[in-house]
Length: 89
Image (cartoon, rainbow, N blue to C red):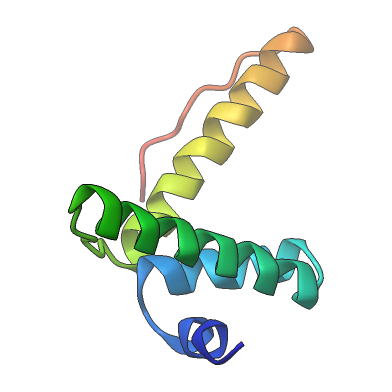
């Protein structure tokens, strides 16, 4: 739980993922999910010699935003609508 608590406050990719899971799931489920994620990362690092590169919370948020936009476009297309993106202000 200590690692998850630290990840909750950090401005990292894992911190952003932990915060999102906590809002979507209950706290105990989110803690277990993050423990599994951390265990998977450590296993891959030790087994295959991979390095973990933290891309930051901004990268995670942008990635999630793209996934949400694509989901909404598909949902609108299934309902017969078309979404047109407006340029950013």
